[in-house]
Image (cartoon, rainbow, N blue to C red; front, side):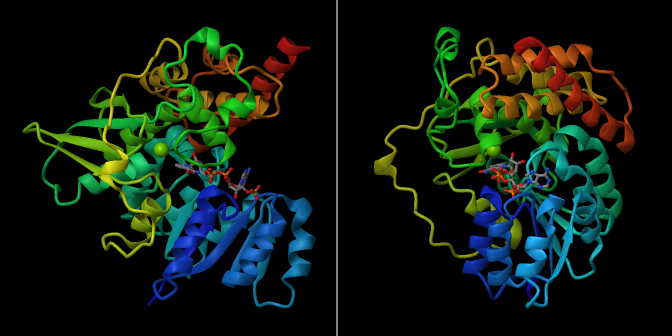
Length: 387
Ligand code: NDP
Ligand code: MG
């Protein structure tokens, strides 16, 4: 029987690549649910091609356009955030790919786990804000969370066959982003266009900016802590500008395993879909003569302060990662709208982390409230500073 997959955020960068994987393996996978936020035209096209059971457009303003366009097909159409969460209960879903960006992924992911769906996790923000809640629930429900983030997929692949061998250390590789090796003076003058030019990966705007600030690596340290049940001290960030070694695991005997390949998100997406099997792919193959040197170095934590902010947030625990995440989402949004400067991003996050209402053991409602409050607070702080 085919695996029936729900894709949350099918119109984004990960969503599109996931659909490509399904297109290449129609005998193994089928699309059960697609969701989009504002790109209704793309959602309609995808629905007509893949004929899911259900689509959800979370921005309700576009509901009637989607409904009208799909009225001739046997496809249910819903709108709004609540629907995206509610459809996770459908008994016909086997696996959920969480490819929405940001905090919006939290509620549907929790609901999907509650209903026993295997999770292919791209939406790292969910693990950042609620890693303990998500992993505890998954353990209780016996649900597997399969990483899609390339570094975490590499770690996961390195752990195959190592069930009884504890992890000694994780080396989390980072490309360093477009500003690797640059100093603060240089960063003062960078533009949005500069920050969007990632050397190795083509991704959605938010994660591309997170890569430029190194917040992405901070989020990934937290994601790795929860996914692999290790202490933050066991995770070392290593800058590897070629993005060929996707991450490494060191075991107790000092042996290190890694997963390598050309940078492509289709590979980790496909591996999560087909795990524990490997499927064929027609992606370009690694060639040693193209990469005579693979280099490794330390991140510059003084210049790229977001990485340390993430370490501080996870060390503090409670709702602090949620505070940090909300501040980062709003700061990045403002940077994308060219309302603030690149170097304002860490300053804003730091200020919000110092001012946010700390909760030691947050419930889901506490996290929802923290996220809501901090978004408003961060925007107010930015507006006050820049008016
Ligand atoms: P994109 O911005 O390209 O896509 C985001 C998707 O989420 C779109 O389908 C978008 O819909 C939808 N969306 C946006 N806002 C909301 C919202 N408020 N509610 C519901 N849906 C929403 O992001 P990416 O694909 O780049 O990233 C998705 C996730 O995967 C992120 O968490 C990112 O960190 C992670 N990731 C991405 C990688 C990549 O290579 N892109 C690599 C590793 C991890 P619409 O476009 O219709 O508005
Ligand atoms: Mg990554």
